Length: 391
Ligand code: ADP
Ligand code: MG
Image 1: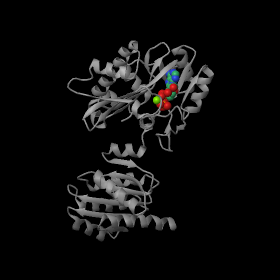
Image 2: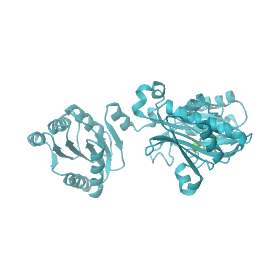
Image 3: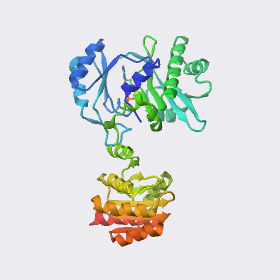
Image 4: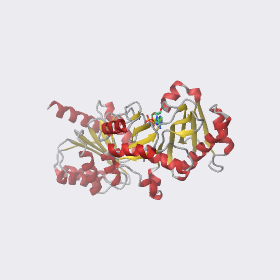
């Protein structure tokens, strides 16, 4: 789960990371009012969306009057901000953050991620902040420092100082940097985060270290024990279909093509999408119905896939181990009775109770195309889409 910049800043501040003075607004008037509360004569107005790259997309602006703040936030509210990370659909701006503008002497990069190879939290830092880490690793791979942290000892003071010295910081800033690094580590560990990023972490012209931006993501599987984090969820930033499915215990991923896929298991999902591509088609999404899917669950899955207007055919590919093909077939029959299906449906069943499953589909006399192999199913789905497009 992702959260907003202002939420991440609030959390990191609690752990001891210095942040600029700032406040949240839900309307242009409130944004202008916030700047008076903050004081000073220069502010930065920042669109709150779950994405980086807001600056270059026009979602961040330095303002020096009430009027400018009101006008700029007026343009942001209700708009879909398209950044290089959001995809063309963009993300809705419903909140803006107003912050004092600081005079920047240097921009650093700081990121903490889970390094699966070493099974540890890895701290990534660079003296070349401001640009995205992907860009940085292409353009200045040597300017990136990495350190993995032993969970038994935690992030020790001397390691944090070593990292800070590695960034070429002044001795007066090393202690501040070490404090920020260790605070981020504790926040990551204590809150079941999967990512913490401060980009840029700045040195101000007065020589202080301040987090000018902040991003955090959390492990969905740990949210049950992190109520204070779960409460920060902002549904307006999520793909509505993906959250709809997740709330029903189905995992659904939205893609750009036109073939809806219902599959059990992530591996089979990958294989199915590869096969569709190989046959010249493109998946609109995939929905993993998981193991032990009841007919009701299959019906819910159909309803979810059908809500996506891009879907021009549905491919059901089940390799039943824990699942039962007869239940899946029952679910398909129910879906035809209860959900409005106007697109071709192709079903490939294999595994437990497959004969029974096929019999149910045959006897139902529904317009369902069946297939014995994955290749055949994908081919039929792609052909069905081109037929309906030709018609
Ligand atoms: P994003 O990474 O989504 O583009 P940032 O929060 O990093 O958004 O802001 C983009 C840029 O705007 C920063 O790199 C920084 O140069 C400038 N900026 C952001 N906040 C402030 C601030 N409080 N004072 C001065 N400049 C800022
Ligand atoms: Mg940033």
